Picture 1 (tube, rainbow, N blue to C red):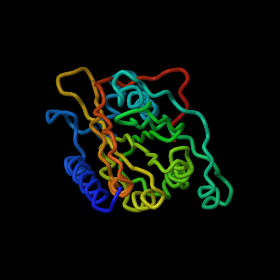
Picture 2 (picture 1 turned 30 degrees about the vertical axis):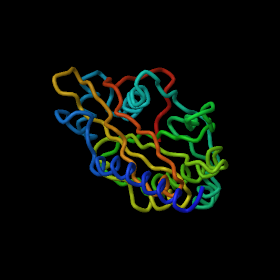
Picture 3 (picture 1 turned 90 degrees about the horizontal axis):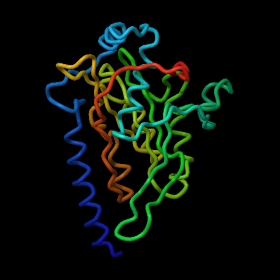
Picture 4 (picture 1 turned 135 degrees about the vertical axis):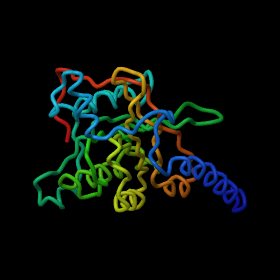
Length: 246
């Protein structure tokens, strides 16, 4: 491939990603009639459903993992992923991270060939918070740990772009610039979607389409990412296997 061909592809991908990202600059719901879900409103809905306020975050996690990929729920993850950077930042106290959901990165190998699959290279993390930006230092450097683990994933080893998708209440209005810069340095994609309340329903919620927060990692890799979401409508729920979310 000569320079002109590469430049043409680069411009085409940059234009396509910019179109997606421009649409998602601000938080948005799947439908204009929906209301962004705050942590306070989440607690009210949980109580309406007989769920203790203290269990609202895990109920929101269940809803988010079950609905962000319509028809394909994401299993709750309990596996630990090593993070030397988190270990160093916490003086050895914490050396792993446990994302809420973990999936392979699947890339369609077009026009010919089977899809390319890279195990454990996409993390889903659900946060029901009343504010904050999720900087790398959040929760004893948990966010840094996610990025560190993904930077050594199968996808990263193969020169692909692993990703983390944050699914949050609307109080998390954006993802910290420090997080997106750290992710871009590590060649990790960062996505963010918020929960919204569906009007005229009995406590139905829906996650909006995830916005890409650092498109440069895909542009520089000449990769056009697939969109994530919106999810399908659903409700909060608990199940016996749940552990408390971080």
